[in-house]
Amino acid sequence: MSFRVHPTAEVSERATIGDGASIWHQAQVREGAVVGPGCIIGKGVYVGADVAVGANCKVQNYSCLYEGVTLEDGVFIGPEVVFTNDRFPRAINPDGTIKSADDWHVGRSVVKYGAAVGSRSVIVPGITIGRWALIGAGSVVTKDVPDHALVVGAPARQMGWVCVCAQRLDEQLRCPGCGRGFRPLGPGIAERDPGT
Image 1 (cartoon, helix red, strand yellow):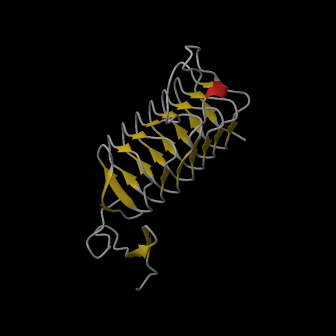
Image 2: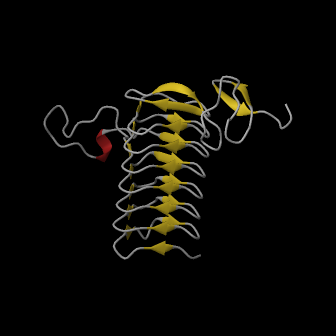
Image 3: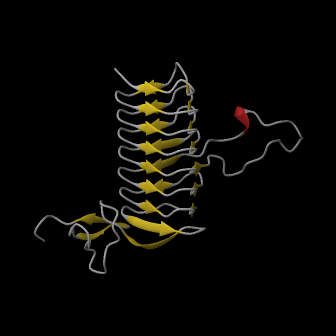
């Protein structure tokens, strides 16, 4: 296998790095983390212990993927995005002793295939972001996001639907950019069969 790690990056010997991945300046990849083939991990990115990053993901500069995060294949994470992992954060216990790894429960978050999270967004623990969803820059995501949903704001609210090419869909759920059509499916939408 061949991958690129910048000399200033810190990659645990117990991490798994896929073929063709690039890990740039001052990034840190912790023990048990998996970075899939073809991924680009930008400058200053933190990939926590046991985090899973699928194939062909792009994680831009200074983003933090803390323990409990899973990115499926083809996910885009913009600069300075933070995935939190503790719903009840405290530095100390009620008796004043410092919290240890045994004093809290890791919150799990999943970003599904092809989704994109805009710059400086914050994702609270326990969230699933659906396939091809688009999170606007600066959003605070506090609840699950359906497939193809466009969400923005703090807290993030749905403002429409997006195509696989990231263009906003019209009222007929058709993409003005590439012409793809979509139909409702569960809480989200799915692409129509060609010709329908």
